[in-house]
Length: 68
Image (tube, rainbow, N blue to C red; front, side, top):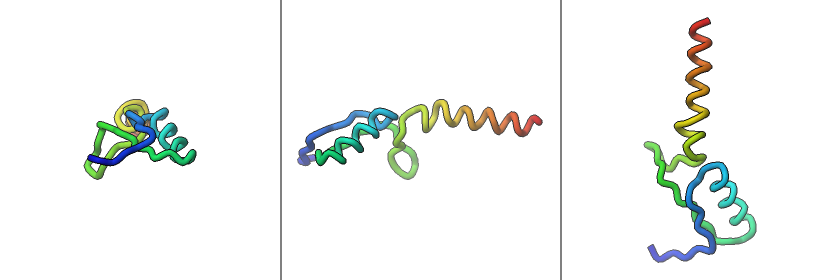
């Protein structure tokens, strides 16, 4: 890979993707590197959004609705 960037953001969690967006808005050539992937591509947003807090809360809420 011979591309050159001004900024390389490691991780696309809550801080990473916001940092990448802001750097791009400031005119910097930016790349965001993420290791978590899904079937259809990269999973932006980090662990909490994709497999942690939010999916767990959705599952808990669904269980409570089903119980009641």
